[in-house]
Image (cartoon, rainbow, N blue to C red; front, side, top):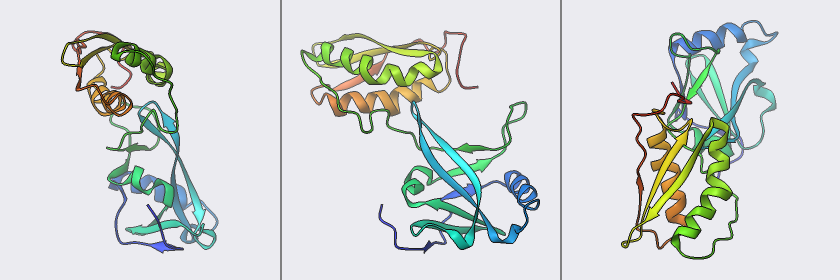
Length: 210
C-alpha cells in the first residue's frame, strides 16, 4: 500500500476502546508535553499467525514521512505505512476480566507464516506437504507448544491434517488451520484440491489461547 508523504486520514485504521483510551490518556498525562505526543502503533514481526507490536508515545513534530495519522477523540494515533494493512480493523483494548497485562490489540488480521520463506518442495503431494509442515509451519506453531501432522492424501488430492500438542483443544486452532496452514499448503502446492482439518478440537488440555 503506497502512502503519500505526511499522510493524515479520517479513516480509523485501529480503533481504541473507551476503556483503553482512559488508560492511554492517563499514561500520556504523565509526560512533559502530553498534547505534543501521539500513540504510535507498529507491527514489528510475527509469532506464528499472530502479529507482534510496538506501542509508544511519539512526538507529533518528529513523524516519519510516511507515518499515517488520524484522530480518535483527543488522541492522535500514528501508524507507519507498512503496518496499515495489518492493523486495519483492529482495536486497542484492555484485557478481558481476569487476564494479565495493560493493553491488548484485538486484530482480525492474521500473519502469513510463510512470508519471505523460499521452500524446496519435491516428490509427490504427501512428501511435499510433509516437507512444508516440517520446514515452515511447525516451527511457527512450536512457540505455542503445538504441531501439525499430515494424516494422508486421498485419491482426489485432498490433504488431511491434524493439530496436536498445545494446538489440540485450542479454541483458535481451527481458525489457525483454516486461515494459515490451509492457505499456505494450497499456495505452495497448487495440485492440492482441499485441506481438511481432521483434528478432534474437543480434546486436549493445553490450549494456548483462552
